[in-house]
Image (tube, rainbow, N blue to C red; front, side):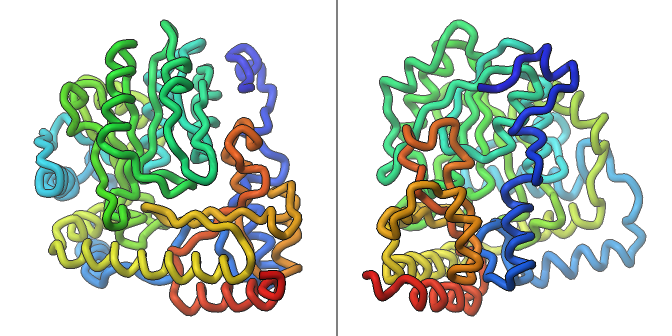
Length: 399
């Protein structure tokens, strides 16, 4: 359970917000460096994004766009985000009041939770969850109420979800396409979540950074497009996953002007503004043709299939993701019962780094994640092929 507000204020450290060895991503990347293992742990691409995006940022640097941007974001990026949301989803936004540029979607999440969750408020979220969700709820003094998406089908348990709500529910924190399961929530599932949020007068925070990576036949449905949800939904977006620019940290939050203003109240005292020339680069990316976005999905789906097939050949039980960057694979056929311990051994044993899915859970057993590993496929084909070769050479004889 998260520490209470009083404990946080006394400086007492928790295992979530101050792990002794750093985050799981930092620890596994360090292991990859130390062992020479192929790093399929951390979800970052190992190739550059579109030349248009990079060239625009370079031109902006050379053109003198190197000082603070406006606090809410450059006019170019705010306008591009508004056009993007209208173009893809029919969402109409006022760039001046309903969009806020942030230092990555992670800051959008942090600023939103810190500004809209008060001590004692409850936050309903699914597990497994992206690790910053729990850390931010804890730091805000909130209490998380998690509902398992159980391996391998990740179905929404409607009874458990409804039971997680109470008169203290302030926020629903949602991610679709979902990290780490790869689940793309259906329109019907989102409608049920929205109905519960409306009934309890809760704000919905929807992390949609993988919006352009919902693989056919699955379709990304923004929560804000459902009837009655625009007025109570904050949506988090990012250029990092779409344009292979995770190191640029250009994200945004969109939603009703009053909620966005409250979020800006927290954000403005953290970073104030974010990478002016990088904002201009991402703005150019958002204006790219439909062919780019279609090609991105199709190419990533092929990489997903190569990794999933390789993991099966290496005797893992694999769930093919519907979207996102990651394949979840159960190592139980290898006799694994503790995914975290197995993750520490895998770099030496097979020359590959992955992340234990159990670290994204409050109760790994309840979510069926105790022996499940997360492998990233947002890598060059050559990187994935090398990882698959190593895994099959190590484990394939067991299949």
